[in-house]
Image (cartoon, rainbow, N blue to C red; front, side):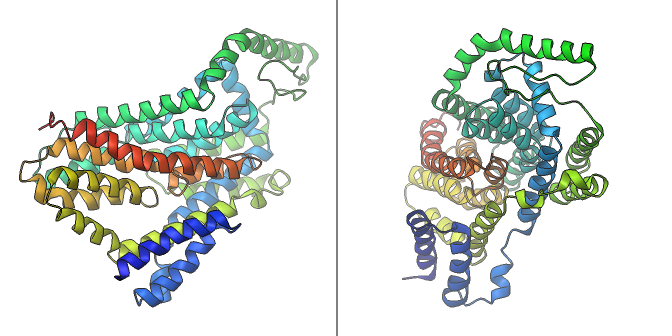
Length: 444
């Protein structure tokens, strides 16, 4: 049995054992990376640790630390309160607002994880407070960010078009963008239908007027009495909680969040370190509001994601992924080879960098694309969709951010259900994108 096969079998065993036994999958994957790396591949421990996703670690720690502070001092509650007023109580609109916001941010060039890091904490807080399925909210946030990334100036779109052009193949940025956005919207619609969207629509029609009246009356009462009112228990309300005011800690937190957004999106600063800088600054200024915030960092999620990504990075570094790609490139039937390329892209991208997969697998497809037997535009678009819509997997950066920002009471359930959705998409996306874009040959 070759080393590549052994490494892949061990990866499967990691998932099986972690699913059967109560053990953190990341811890198991780290042990597996050490054993496989040193015994099967014969590399040093330092080389194994070289695959640890330090950047992802800083992002997860920084973002969850900052939003733990924001939750402690009431900033998240203030944002949620203003959001429900803005949509006039129609909570069914909120997941789609988050989808559009993420798509717009990434469409103008922001990195997908940066957009999700900014939007997911607010979105998941809103989901917890207004009884929206957190998996539904998380899926729409991630799919919006993914679809927007394929705009001609988006990161995924620019990378894909650049690799294709460099390989001398035909490309169509418009088809790529529209197809990817359509696929993300379709997944979001399906999620909305099966994860409580219809109930939200019914609740929205019944509760919209009541919600707005409650908020308005509460605000009026507060102004008249010169104090914060206590809210009633209207539809989608928060019981006896008073609508939060914008005090100094919340105002400075909002300013920090704005600085995080501007720094990450306009100046390309590292999201993780910038979030940590904002969090540390807030802690120094308002230490009482920061008590317990470090304990609320999603350490279990950090370990899980860090371990899995370390193992997959070992496979990439030792050529296992390339070995799979080379095997596909020698398949005699071009259409079958095209499908296998899409499937490999989906499977690997669910645990690794989508950007890296797009840059690695497109060149592998060049030899048989140049024969003209398979549509270059069709296969590249199908590969791009297959490799990106799986970013909702909890093992990817975006999925991990959704899990990390979920309410602690449902975090394990969100992880399991996102994994189920992610693994389903891993199988379904390559099949449908290949059947729609490659098999007919209409994009030749």
